Image 1 (spheres, protein in one colour):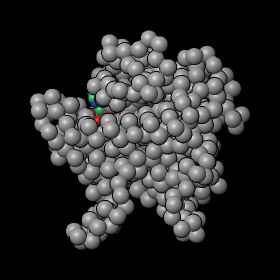
Image 2: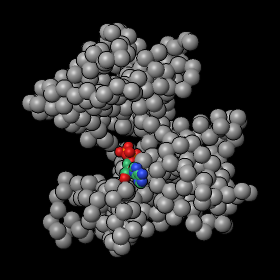
Image 3: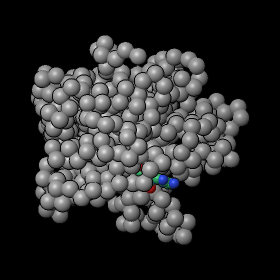
Image 4: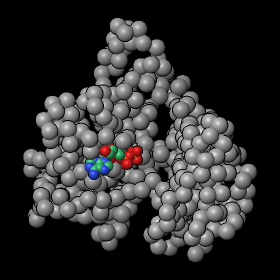
Length: 407
Ligand code: ADP
């Protein structure tokens, strides 16, 4: 079946048309429309083997952006679809489902109400995700609409992992707790690892590392997330492109006091001005930092060191959480493509049974591979992930569960 995977942010709409069913999902076309909220924006669409197409369009709101995306798909040279009606389902990426969703959900009025209820937890994301749904629901009324939550997979975390040591009456009132994100990606890594080994997901203890612009790790036992590094928001945990990750809350309070920073400015500083970019002062892009560090730039080197050291700390922590692990799995732009980062993370971890085969590590660029040295107790893998196919896969899973998909 043809599934439209949709990711609506504040100023952009990313989309992909995915053929999904019994086999591996296949991307038929993908593109983006931006900036939403402008008189003139660009709609870009690419199909495998065809030249990239670009249209200049008026983009006052998300409704216009989604119309433009659908027009690009219907006009695709390869004739992927002739009419919108051929799109049977839409998977909507929803950032926050609070503690209500453990699985992707077929969107109903009640589901919309709960997502609206989660807006205070993700004020920069959920409202735009919902705008995308409303626009799509009126443009594609025949299609099934599914909400795919970043948070759902982590709803299996026990209270000891998701509870902050803050006064619990306040936490309960405002739903302050750890939720975790990148859930579909961590889940996919566990599923795929099990599939590759011809055994059920429940047989393994895994530590998954999603290292992209946003970075998170997850401890998975019995096919369930038991801990993850992002928290109430995606800010907690690892060092990321522009996010600080773990930081002493008192340092944040003092900086606000000393610099006279508003909540909004501090929020931007922590989410957009920190991480690899904040430490290096050069870039949030790992490729640039690796190049600069190789040329002897000390700030780029420090950013990379802090990045890898934080991952190693979480590896050790999750090894303890799980009481050992069968495998560590890398994914995301950095996890899949940067052998040097994987080598730095896995160096001298004999105590955890981790040893990389250097050649295999160097060869594993953007492809599925076991990187471990012969006889290493804990295996290390690269398993590529892709947001659009994840959304399509989760959409299909929700349709199956609801009896709305029959091969
Ligand atoms: P997002 O989280 O936005 O989906 P990606 O998963 O695409 O991001 O990851 C982006 C990150 O991956 C950037 O830091 C980029 O530098 C890094 N990256 C991509 N290719 C390489 C590469 N060949 N070597 C090192 N880093 C890479």
